[in-house]
Image 1: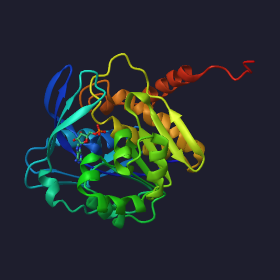
Image 2 (image 1 turned 180 degrees about the vertical axis):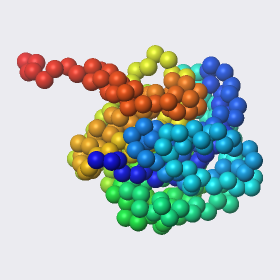
Image 3 (image 1 turned 180 degrees about the horizontal axis):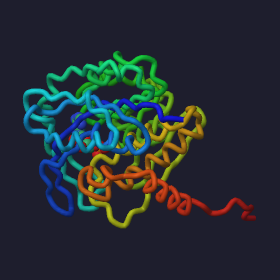
Image 4 (image 1 turned 120 degrees about the vertical axis):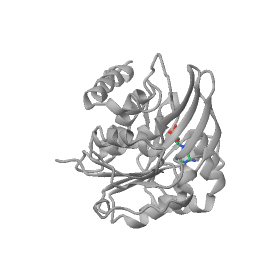
Length: 309
Ligand code: AMP
């Protein structure tokens, strides 16, 4: 079966990163970039995003195209590309946003190319919820709609974000953000409360502690791979979400099991992404790489099926 096409809307960005290993400026990032590179390991991807007319390198877009990403939905607009700056703590377990400059995003009105309208899986990457909603209004009957968001929009646009939540089936969100969204500290309770806001499944990303899915079947856990060296966690959430939808696009049916398999694949994609600064590692990710990490995951959690006592 040919994989279904995956539509990804999100940011394309220049990131300034302060990492324990050094400061890196003008690193190409953004939720759509990370998401599309990960998803393209498995399926044809279509991207809707905006970049600055003059400052965004064409070679970066070409790099996506080389992986089979359809980039006709990337608009070049007069002005500067979106910019984000962040500083990570010494152990990389937390980060602080130093600056967000929406630039070309402030006047962006996403317009789906006609060829994108029939996309069967849709990933609404982290961007203004009004833009997420506008994309949803333009797609025809997708099989699955997943969305990500972040503190910036939970604080700044709670009403519009509420509208997005009512229209999606899968929320992919990190642990602090689901707490902030729902006011519940306990993750399981927070996920339950988030499901009441609309999505039938909530996937909570917990950084080095893996990811938890909450759906009508109960809870499911996928570990994060215990890497000895993590270089740059930026975009881990987006490569997780991209890998998730990319893998699901290869499945004839969306079942509880295919979803669980996709979550482990998503975790494998994220584990590669953090091995290098920006998108460097993700840009060359192959199915063989992912497959190797799946073997490592099997070894990580296998302790036999026989009775213990
Ligand atoms: P993650 O580490 O998965 O949360 O994603 C990091 C990426 O999100 C970076 O490459 C940023 O460019 C992008 N980003 C940060 N803040 C925003 C925002 N407010 N809107 C859209 N994208 C953002």
